[in-house]
Length: 319
Image (cartoon, rainbow, N blue to C red; front, side, top):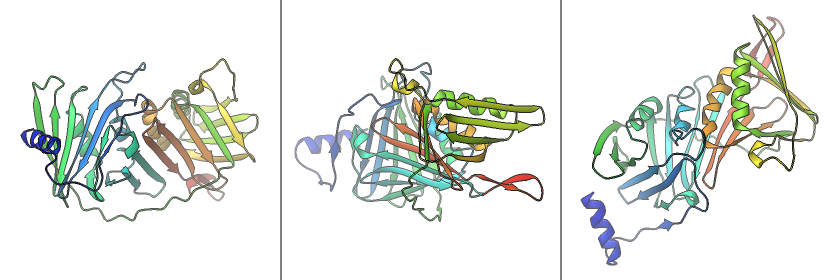
């Protein structure tokens, strides 16, 4: 804390070392659920600070850590890349069926500063455990040195009457940054994220695989299991009386259908509190993209390979 005040005093007096990048922008709209976020990077260290605020929704306890909850069952570790453009994470699950792509852009931060790229290799499960130690109104500071062996977490209460610090070991993760090409999807479905979450949960009560079929009439979800079958059709409802987040919209150039593992889709829907809507993009024989946009901040995207029918065994396997 003293070093932080000293640094601010030096800046106020025009002293101290100048950095290549110093972005200080106000958030243009309320950012659910992290209201204020600050990222500072120096030549030998960086600091990530954000103040959690309850999201103005029926789920006031929802916060930005839920994006980690949505990926901890899919990947166990990952490299968090801090760059002048923002904070990002890209990783695949161990079976190479699903790809996770997270981007928090610098423009969405209350304060952002990063002079060069700094990777942090972290165990996702341990990271979730660490961050859950923070209170809902705590200011969380994450700090590490250049090429760090450890990451320090500092939790400060709103009234500054309680300060806790934790230290977590980093990991050396050798992974290749995958370039996800821009794709023109033949079918795009935008619907309320809560409805998609409920739909996936209902499908899971019947079977393990969901067949998604998109036509001009709407999108049909079907599953079959030991206890029976289930079919749910969602039709477009672009009514002017509905809010944008309550509408279901379907854009299609040609019909498309594919089958996907519900256990992955249910994990994806844990990101529902981050966005009121979810967008599904589909192309025949290619992975589906499930995207949650974080207002004025970035996105969380999940790519999931379709299942291919196994004609010999009468089953299905992931592509």
